[in-house]
Amino acid sequence: MPTIAIIGPGAIGGTLASLLLETPQNTVSICARTPFEQLQVTAGGKTIHRTVTVHTDSDATAPVDWILLATKTYQVPQAASWFPSLSGPQTQIAVVQNGVEHLANLAPYFPAERTVPVIIDCPAERKSHGQIVRHGNVRMDIPNTPNSAAFAQLFTDPAVTVNLTDDWTTAAWRKLCTNAAGAISALVNQPANIAAAPQAAAIMEALIRETIAVGRAEGAALDDSLIPAIIANAAAAPEGSMNSLHADLVARRPMEWDARNGVIARLGQKHRIATPYNQMAAQLLSLLESQ
Image (cartoon, rainbow, N blue to C red; front, side, top):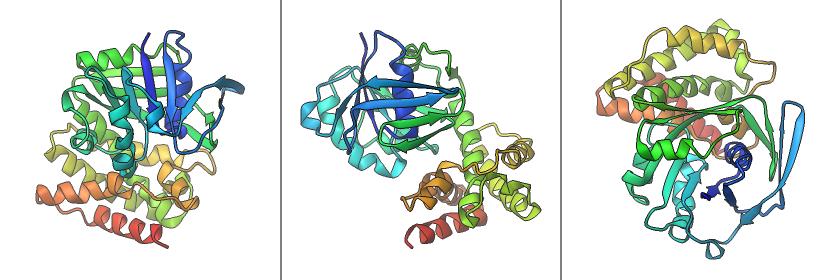
């Protein structure tokens, strides 16, 4: 029976916990700052309540087979305080986060050979502690390795698809193209369909073009056809839709501007590729965060 600990029961972590609990052989616990007794997930008009074990003290935990890290990228140093008590010699960790630096972010804390980087598309939002609304199915892209295959086998619910890819770098940068463009919503405090405005679409195009250029330098195979597809998808989003960056701004929480735009500027500098739009986006978001 696989034992699994999820660090960070937000929209992503809470959704993954609910999907893992659909497989009877999984034993799932949650590591969080705030305790709650039930995990309540609403999807497709149906609400499921599950009693879960929530730890707020690492001293109360024991080694598990899998750690699922579902915190924000900037929370990795704090989340790492859970690793010693949760880790045994065979423990593996799946890093379910935004950006393209999953392995680099975990390198100071966990062996790379037991780390699985995960790109996720998860249309969900957290209403309160332990209360999640999932608006659609979940897809995860992971490298095609034996460790990743073992991670994929943890999920049997048809609402989740785990894709093993031989080119995870491309999958990660393709997602980053979408995330980088999503900065416009937070910058102007407007929902995703602001992309229908020509001015917003022009800025999104510039953000994506820079991301594609840097991604190609990092080894990703990215086609320019991503640009109109991403903009059209955002423009067609339901009224009021907010990406996680925008939602964090509205809730006055720290934002993942570095993992979504700052990383493009940093890696662009490494490859001597100009990234003025992403650099400015990261700087402006940083200023908004400090207000």
